Image 1 (cartoon, rainbow, N blue to C red):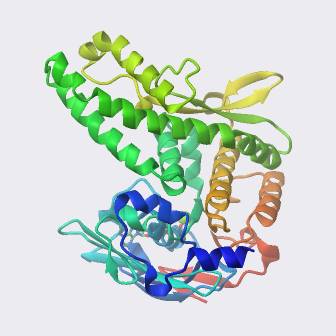
Image 2 (cartoon, rainbow, N blue to C red):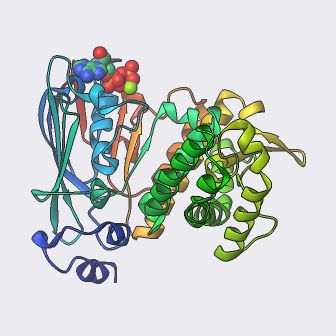
Length: 406
Ligand code: ATP
Ligand code: MG
């Protein structure tokens, strides 16, 4: 059944990956299912120099001391998913010191033997980024997003919980851009209109100049709001379940807190009406502050710990381990979203995930990853004891000063 679905989805053949216009891009994500990274070629990506790596279908465990390039390797792989670093950095920093250009090439295989090659290159001087699929340059990088269907688990994920609301909005935006058709387009429209509207407010322009943006703002903002709200409401149970499984039975919840008063608005039209009313009610405050004060740019993904019937703000009251557990739960929800929306197992990238978790939590997350995630895994850690996934049977590579040996 699955294989048949794949065949249908990929009809058009290896060279059938056509250039899509933007509106088709997110729909295409539902059709193209390349999952296995079989080969990775790197040139001047951070300290990794020149690498031509063949990845086993089940994945690999990469062991090496601190500062040898383990995270850099996962960063390079994940770059092929979103064409930006998963770390808070710019493309400039990814180019090896003293070099002008980096290049990452991944060959991705689907279950029925189809193969696509994804290339990303960045030139520091002109800040030029080029993305190709099977050698065809993509006019819009958005057309090539999400080919890998990868999820990266990293120690810095704790910032998802500890950091400000923008970190959690970014999480939602990445997950939803890769899984919900039309979301990225609405988000980009919203951001563009918001910035113009804010410029009008900041420049002290008249009411008519500000309000000229309202129809577009409300339309795109309501689409973003509705998609985020619906995703959170359908995934909050999974979040609680994962949190409980890793923590050993403790409760946590996530809740969508919109930056617009929805007052029970359900469908798109109601949300648009609620957003319009909120804007109208904030004219005075906007004038005073010189910025748009209501909308999805003020959303929060609120996470709480359950404590004897109370809900405690996880960001405020959670311990380091509790926050890390919540961040792991968010990544597991992301993996589940890929599985459910794209119909295949995600590529799981695990960057030293067991560091800083207590032994029982480590065992439970290991158990969960074994049962939930059956796709390809690339795991890194400084200690061999921390790459035990898949019964410790994954092929083992070592990394030393950016050189990878199998
Ligand atoms: P840890 O176990 O401490 O997390 P790691 O193996 O994950 O270490 P990475 O973060 O992958 O280490 O690599 C860090 C190394 O990469 C540092 O030595 C750093 O100087 C080097 N590095 C980072 N950016 C660049 C760059 N643009 N060019 C060359 N080297 C770089
Ligand atoms: Mg690292």
